[in-house]
Image 1 (tube, rainbow, N blue to C red):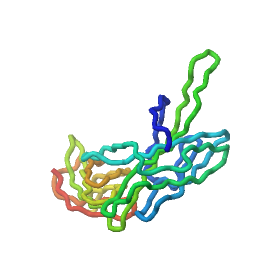
Image 2 (cartoon, rainbow, N blue to C red):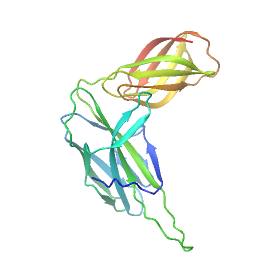
Image 3 (cartoon, rainbow, N blue to C red):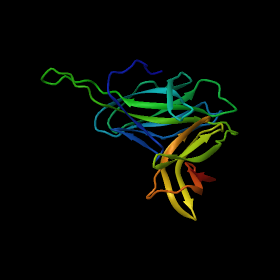
Image 4 (cartoon, rainbow, N blue to C red):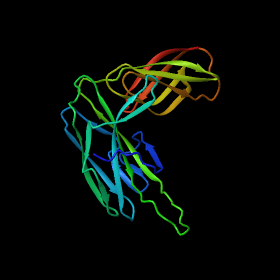
Length: 241
């Protein structure tokens, strides 16, 4: 496993929402952006690439990923999984395939969720004036999903008024994650408010998502369509307060 000592270096996290097949951070990349496994998979291959012209050293931590009941991400270091080899140093333009392995028994009833965070390990330098400079370490965070065949998300949404604006409050009562990519609120087939983003809903959580509207939306009945990361959608009849 990688060292779990607390780093004093400044770390900038790039929390990705799977917008592309390869994640980039500074001068290194990771493929794939999101890691999907089944309970039968004991390990999965991940490719690390040095995109720069100098050597790069990388380290990673694996976190169990949960969310509070309000949808706030919570990460806790775990030994459920291991990345091999544990230390990666890449020459310029080089790439290396590593393996992410599950050590614990899979859960047949629900999806297991983790975050693999790969970060650059720069060296502190001592400039001419003898003051210490600490370079910024860039990092990438990849979600890891271990999904049994029967696991499904169960999303339900309603609309709340938040000050002058509107919020879609969505909950997930299922056994697998849902990622909301887009929400449209319609009246008479015309979109009156919209959300665009990439919000994860892990099982048992709910979170509000702000809806943007070009003009105030009056109270009354409306139709809400939620589009997920797999391209599927779900429709709800809602009443605006």
